[in-house]
Image 1 (cartoon, helix red, strand yellow):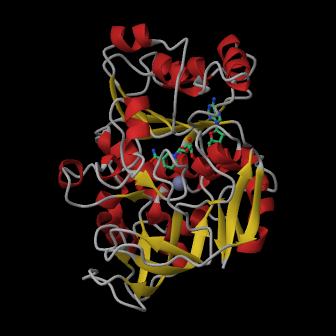
Image 2 (image 1 turned 135 degrees about the horizontal axis):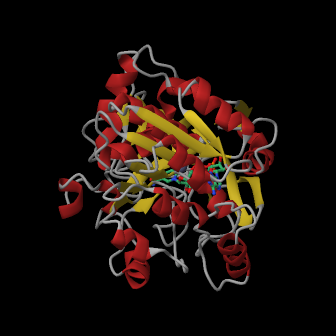
Image 3 (image 1 turned 180 degrees about the vertical axis):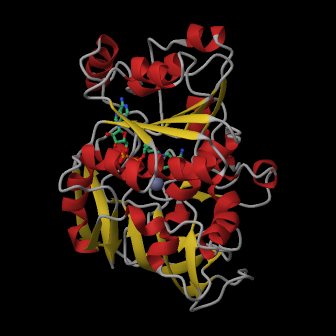
Length: 390
Ligand code: NAD
Ligand code: ZN
């Protein structure tokens, strides 16, 4: 089959590789009908996630048709159309039974590596390095899906791939970030990053009753989408001092909930911390560029909440923990427990409360994935979300 494979920093290509096979009775094989490129894939593309190996198949946002089922699979059969959440979860460990699917104790065969880094390692993720299990991803013609009775969601008739594909990750991630942070009616929510995750955090904030949503980025078409589709007030970080503008907009109090939908490749505009981060990341002295997260902490109101949806992988310095402590902030963060949101968000789609396909700017054959990674990373050609058709 054809698959998009990682071959090094900024090097991805379509390779011909063996078709996946059932390895465990709980597996299914999917023929992938749609798959997307995520901001998280860019961290792999840009070489910031360790333990990638040449030939690894990327992709954790995908859906398709079941073509084979393992002997123990009970809930799915050949021909079913499913969308698959990006964390791999066993469904029965302590964490899965507490709805913390991305922290699953069982799914990651390389958990001991992650235990060394984090103290306690979490779930495996599709197509996301050997640290996170070494499972092949879904930017391919076929993919093996383990624990098939736990993750995949059967797609009801009448819904197109584009309407449900983002249940695999970015819709639950953006929505879940504000939900877990406890957004409530009357809240002013500020969201850093108007990429796919930020756009769904904006939508989530409204769906959950926020009174005001302010979105921050510096890419014009992303800010535009936040204003039009997202009905958010916007701040262009390349033109305004974000902190000053947020204070102006909130009577000097700061937003109630601040969401980092940027992650470890944040851009800073000439500030000292941003320049130092870049240098340290380049020489591997620090691994994450935390410019946005620092600003989030500074800007948040006293007693407010910070939700970190953006991915961080390793070490951050010059971290304003004193400010976080002094202001009594509450933090929520982590890989989204996507499984938990599949059904509630599917219902919102079915009721017509939201059509997630508004985000798609590029629809391409899988063959064009290598060029699409670059276009998406560099935000060229108005690119906000790429959907690939194997
Ligand atoms: P993206 O790269 O398309 O979007 C990031 C956006 O942040 C860009 O529009 C960029 O211009 C903007 N940005 C950069 N620096 C900024 C700054 N200092 N202030 C404000 N905006 C800034 O990616 P995405 O797909 O939207 O993903 C965003 C983050 O969420 C990534 O780190 C990704 O890995 C992460 N993510 C997390 C989960 C999870 O489960 N927690 C799931 C999916 C993605
Ligand atoms: Zn993703």
